[in-house]
Image (cartoon, rainbow, N blue to C red; front, side, top):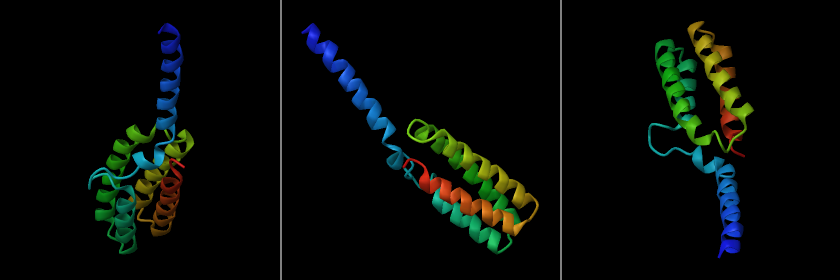
Length: 121
């Protein structure tokens, strides 16, 4: 019995960790209607294209809140560089919206979407 436990416990533990590390694509999917990052990015793109800066600023703050909720789910299954890069994109997006710079805002949104897409692969 002791030999069985010393063999099976490490195998189960390793299997559990492998499942967590490979679950990035599933964990980044929206669990409700309030944590959909791609939808939030699309809304901000529409706001920036119509130069509705007040609404874009509000939606960027909402995107930041959504991102902070999702980071806790994907932090174990995604690369830290991708997580940090998306956080930096959101910060740069806030600055571009404050400056009312349409080109920079769209650039940051496109890059943020690419980081989101490659997160958890």
